[in-house]
Image (cartoon, rainbow, N blue to C red; front, side):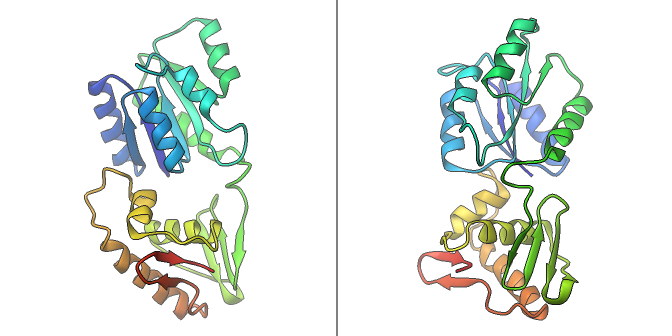
Length: 222
């Protein structure tokens, strides 16, 4: 799952990011509200951890900048503000959960997993096209005839991205950011290897030529 961590404390930000990555999350980090809205406008996230006391634009401002519906992350607020009014303000502004600092990392994980299990307006659907079925919630994929496909996490994320935005061309660098995060040390050349492996599995499953390469532009499912 891709997560945006918005926290102005460098020490806490680093500790949380390391812990979350060790648990399998793809994490981008922002140190203030303006930086956070920049990430949110350019990239898609499943989850967001948000502090309220941020410089330049506070957490309530970030929440109000989120779209009212459609593709938006589930938001867990982590804040030192422990008054009932602060919680009400954050929840009314669009937060999904609220946890007061200091906190246990295990509780943060539990709450994130609980948020991820909530039915989503956009991401709970099963994607189907050209004999391929993809269930993002169950993280399962099937090909022609109901044959289960054994995809790696990045192959699954790539196939979901291309199916969900069918007809849109994604450059290698954009795909890399979407599935590996902005701080990944991987090269966008690794996307060629990833696409090759996914294409081979699709071909073996009877779904040949599903992913197209637009020279100089990127990849798509038309």
